[in-house]
Length: 212
Image (tube, rainbow, N blue to C red; front, top):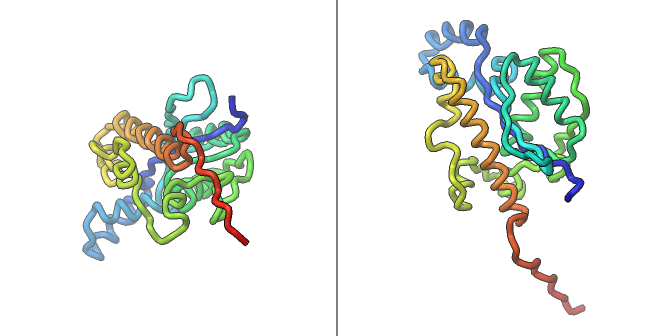
């Protein structure tokens, strides 16, 4: 069994109560539609919080996808406990969003990280970002939905996507959001295996000798 401990994860975020109150007036003043305001609020750690975090750890015996929900400090504390001894962190757009968001919300909540996870770019260890690995650090910021479909993997976005998380939360549909977050993680895990050829039984193509 491999000694490499891999942490697959994804977060769902929603605006904080105060940011919604503050920006209701802004939306009226700027005549922006509510969905666009909510989307913008949800993407900034200054105006949003973590609602839930789904994860799977390999090569643990039970590597099923689990969910963390509750208060944000509880979610963050548990994340840093789990992350303490993991070697590789895998997710889609986690360099530009998820990990950065987690660090920033940890600061806001005064939750000390258990370790440093470098957010250096142009590398795939200890952070393997499937979005950047697919584009090889080009300008193509492909969505998880599109990448999964291209690879023949069932998309996690068929019944719910990020734009619907806050309306679902307001409607009391937290279980649906948690299930959606867990599907994202399972999809990321399958994408990672495809990108690294971990699920392939084909032998590696030997290098070609170039005459001097």
